[in-house]
Figure 1 (cartoon, rainbow, N blue to C red):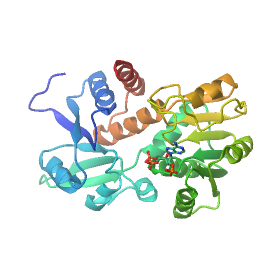
Figure 2 (tube, rainbow, N blue to C red):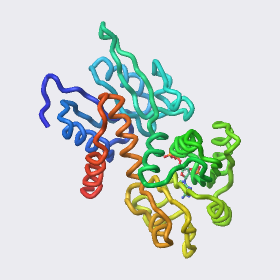
Figure 3 (tube, protein in one colour):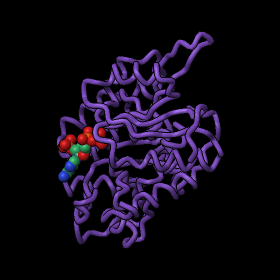
Figure 4 (cartoon, rainbow, N blue to C red):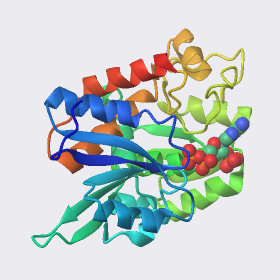
Length: 289
Ligand code: ATR
């Protein structure tokens, strides 16, 4: 990659950011399309978000991704917030626009919900009319549940270890198709039996805890189920192995990372993203780690 006086800059703000796959994913996409753009990791400490964004605008950055722990705190600094991001209450992509006088403005988007739905469809599962079980009630779950409701899921049951958090998510998203339950093996099996899609949004099963799964050991996954795990390290989690070995469809979390990145790429560049190139770059980066 050649950096010169015309190189356009984007990046990711987070704390920490050193394990992010996004620089490899976006720089591979820029290279594939011959774009003179560069994506850099930007470690921004909690409490430094506002000054960081002002600095990026002044430095001519075209935009940034936003990751943990800044997805909510950036909201207060933005000039506009897209409807998806407002409904989810979090921003993962910022476009820095400039008027004819060079005055910058910051526009917030959330590509996680659409990214999830895109990855689900790419994996062969259409959410419209489906009954879905979502495990977890954190930030990732909010985006997933919003995406599912927008895409026409007929029922979304949110199970969480801490029931109050599931209830809070359900009441804040406010939709009659939503219900909250505590995450217990019995309630999970019952809900999964009555659903077509199971989504894990928790960190259970993520490296180094690769022997953990939300699904009880020794119990078959209903084969009619599609199981989507947002965890992508490892690519095949224990949950996805349990699904595959039971004959259920398994979709890994890398697809969502790539799709949300592809949507951000399109917001910044106005070009259609090379999704396969981006996925391969992520896989190579995961193998390298
Ligand atoms: P994110 O924004 O990535 O979703 P988060 O807000 O920290 O992250 O949420 C993590 C989710 O994983 C929560 O739903 C959490 O459950 P609690 O609300 O009860 O904390 C869930 N989680 C994490 N570790 C878990 C475990 N060992 N068993 C069950 N759920 C777990």
